[in-house]
Length: 177
Image (cartoon, rainbow, N blue to C red; front, side, top):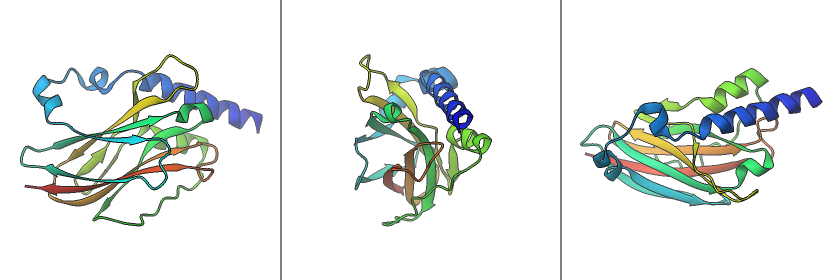
């Protein structure tokens, strides 16, 4: 049991260190006009009963959104991940994650989710406060390439017990021409 928790702890540390670099470090510098076109949706902790609805225009493909999450999730062993993309506006989406083997969970935490012309990137730390236990700002990039209605879900889970007090951040997206 100790080895499992130690390896999960190391996984969280690795995840946090790879998240310290904003998306510009990975994808190259973005132009100022790109930043102006990004629509931002901001969540504050805790996520319970937080569902946001937004409209984006996909005439300039892809339409960009940024989900900002103010959270102290890292202090409780939680990690953020792109959970799911559903077609349509789902009022009661399924919000469960089955326990996975350690390697599968590591891969699941690191990957983005791409379905129905919508891609949700791995949430990363965008702004770090220098006080222990202080909320950090996490950002999850979202790209929409097709007209339609979508439900995007980002979750915060304990990797070793994903059903234990997981939090879900839900955004309904109405993409128009």
